[in-house]
Image 1 (cartoon, rainbow, N blue to C red):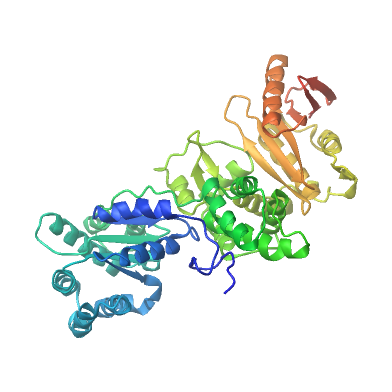
Image 2 (image 1 turned 90 degrees about the vertical axis):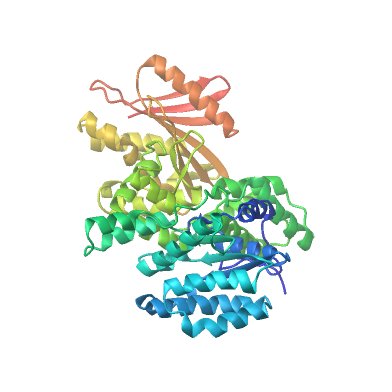
Length: 536
C-alpha cells in the first residue's frame, strides 16, 4: 500500500508519513509508569488520538501492562439518560479491547458480569475485582478519547468521581484500580464541570458549588508539547525523501513549514499533502523546494478552500463575541496583551488553539495560517460594512513585471486619506488609521499574496506588515509620528527588521495626527537600506 500524508483521523505508521514523536511518547510513558491520572487537553486535530493509539500499542507490547483504549465517540447519546445503559456501553468497549488483546480470562469475567452491573458503586466493585483477580500481573491503563462527547453530562462526571475516589483509596493501600487513567479531549474536566454548573438552574447554590469542585483534581500536570518542532518535521521529510529517492533541502523546507504552522500537527500534514499530491505531480522534477511550501500555503489560505478545522475556527469566533473582539484586536489592530491564562477569554482562545503564549509572555495567534484565515474572515465583514469606501481599489496597476509596486500603493493611499479623511479628528484617525490601511491593502493583494502583521510592544505602537507576493517579500512599517528623534530611532528599528528578513528595501507609513501636518513623501538612505516614507 502506498503511503501518504494523512489529514483525516488516526495516523498509522505503515500507511502514513509521520513525524517521529517517539520522544513525546517516552515522556508520556514516564507519567504513566508513575501511576498518574491526567488529561491530554489539546485543540481539535492536534494528534491526540494518534498519541493515544501509539501509547497503547507500546504499553501492550510489554508483558507487565494492559492498555484499554476506548472512545466516548462510540457511546450512543441516549445512553447518558440511564445509568445502567451508560455502564453497559463502557463495559462493552472494555470487553472488545480485552478480546482483541487475547486476555481471555478477563474478557469472560466482563461478559459474565455485564447484566449485573447497573450502577456506579457496582461498577467500582467490578473494577476492583477485574484488576485484582483477572489481571494480577499487569498494570492496567485506561485511555478514554473524545471526552468532549460527554461535555454536559452529569453521569460522566459521576463516573470520573468514582475513578478519583478509587485512585485515592489505592494510594492509601485500600483498593485496587487502574494503574493510570488518561482522558483526551479539547476541554479539560474543570471546564466541563463549570459548564454543567452554569446550565443546571434547578440545583441549589450548595449543590452547584459541589459540582464546581472538579472530580479530576487528582490529575497530574500534562506539559508534553504535542506540536511539531522544526527538527521533528525533518524526520517526516527524511522518511518521505528516502522512499521517493529525492534530495530536497530538508532543513529549509522544515523551517518554512514550521514558519507557517508553528508546528500545528494537522496543518503540517496538510501542507505536505498539498505538495505531494497537487503541486509536485504537475512537473517533471519531483524534488521539493521552499517555493512549494509557499504554494501550499497559498492553497490552504485561499478563502475558497474550507475544511472542518477552519469551519470550527470561524464558529468559535462567531459564537463568542468577546473572543472575536480579542482576536480582532490582536490579528487586525496589532494590539498586544499579556497571556493571562486565568482570563476567561484568553483561556477560551487557548483552549480552541487560537491563542498561544509568545516568548515575551504575550498573546499571539497560534500560526500564520490561522492568522490569515481569521484576517480574511474579519476583513471581509469590515469591507462589507464599515469600510465599504475602500473596497474595490485592487487593480493591475499595482503590479509590474518585477512584482508588487508597494510605493504606488502607499502613494495612492496617501491621496485617498487626503481626499476622504483629511477633515476627520485625530482620535478617529488614531483609532482607525491602521484598519483603514489594511482595508485598502486587502483588495489589492487578495488572491495574489498575503500580508502578516508583526506587532511590537512599546510606546511607539509600531506594526510591521510583511507582504508575500509572487515569491517576494515586502515590509511596510506603520507607526505614529513622535518627532525627529523618534523618527531616527524608528529608522533604526526598521533597518534591523529588514535585516531579519534579508531585505535591503522597505517602506514606512507614518501617521501624523498634528493639525498642521504635511502630506509628504521621502526617499531615505539609512545605513545600507533604502526606505520609502509616506506621511498621512
